[in-house]
Length: 355
Image (cartoon, rainbow, N blue to C red):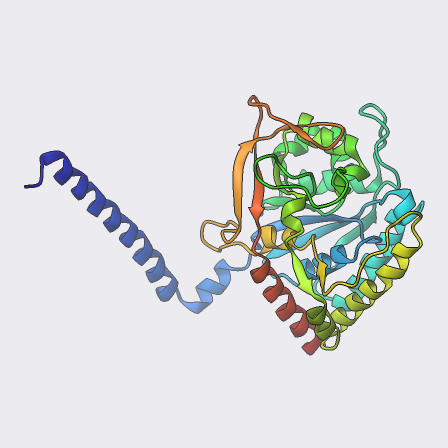
């Protein structure tokens, strides 16, 4: 015998299933019945605007990410910012050198209206009260404060947060108008372990700790963080990269950048020699996954996983201190590398065939 509470619960469960079926079938019916001409009209706007900020004079993974973003039709890239590296790693004008590298990618891609490309500051912020606006920060503020754009604005950063921090300090109103996707930061306790070797702060954080602290501890910018343990999962085999270099102009250019990287690292004082490896970490590619590879209905990078938590206080050594009275942030625990690399390879090859 079924008791009344169980019977009522079963009715509610069936009703819920019916609602889900109705919504699914309705959405599918719309997809099947909307005329192609109307559908084309609906698809004319982009899913997002993306400001790209990376240290293009350093690790070539940022150049892979830049090329992939530029070939992604779902997003509009109005602005590219070349950020600085530590002077012992990239020299005194690494931001300017990065502009030249990024321009080479733009020259090869030649796709649509060219984004505005600008170099950022050549040095990190000295202190919370010692900073200076740059042409890059002015351009960031101008894009964030636009009133004529319907698409959400993402700030895709694969380097330090110098330019975004200065932009927010210059005009705090941008905080509610921009969403940061950052490749950077240490592992979160309880979620992952740091990599083998000496304990040291994550690289992108270490380039400008003050800037990262401004964004985490003071700003109201929503953060989607891809910490070190997650971006280190983005491994592409050297065999795949070598094959890609044979098949398209952008692949050849990027393959050459990787070949030159080893020689560049050897010139850095006290940089340890690296063993031969069959993989390369394309750690900036999650920036594409989380901004360009979203579902069309209920847009979100749904094939990746994150946890939602209060934004912690970011300390000077790169570690975190929990706090409750703050905005929420996404900490990604897995980003879909398979989807990302399949899409990247296909778009790179197609770009070569269309030339």
